[in-house]
Image 1 (cartoon, rainbow, N blue to C red):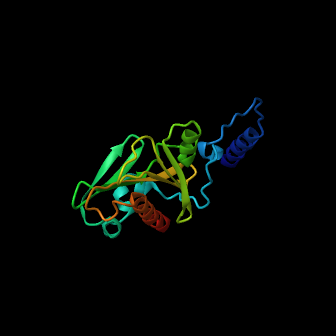
Image 2 (image 1 turned 45 degrees about the vertical axis):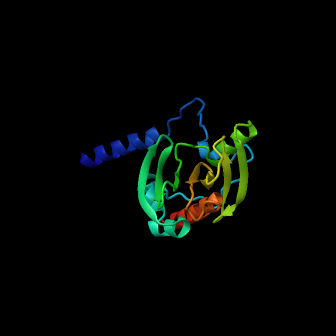
Image 3 (image 1 turned 60 degrees about the horizontal axis):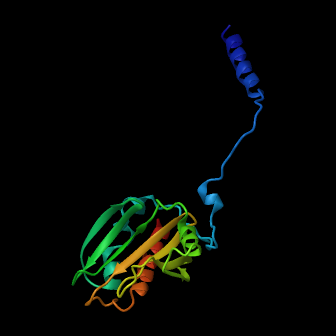
Length: 195
């Protein structure tokens, strides 16, 4: 009797697999499938293991590496921004700093900057040479000034790592904030690739 019940149950399950459902299936491509767009370059070596850095942006680069790039670090601080967390390294003497982090809230990655450039919404837009195999753009929207640079590097087609030095007199990188941003981004990418 038990064997008969088991066979009947299997028969019902197998019979149910053959049921046909009519209608039209709709699928929408995930955001990453439509990227890159607006003339942005594809990220040839996307990094997928980013959750730890998104949660703790200061862990992207050891303080000793930041000090080798921009001088003695007085303290670090984490900012919980609307688009993602960032880490701020505050240098001695102050008030020089560099802020960096992944921007998971921007699901269009570098493509968003290329779109803004095409619309004339950026006052600075300069694609840069590959940084550790990743495309990048120096950009701004009216905040340009001595000791400041904003660099976004494509980690994936849908994710950027953005670095913003704000340097003042006394910082060794004052005359080359974009050089500092590039070095910081390169260090972060190397560490992300180790994850």
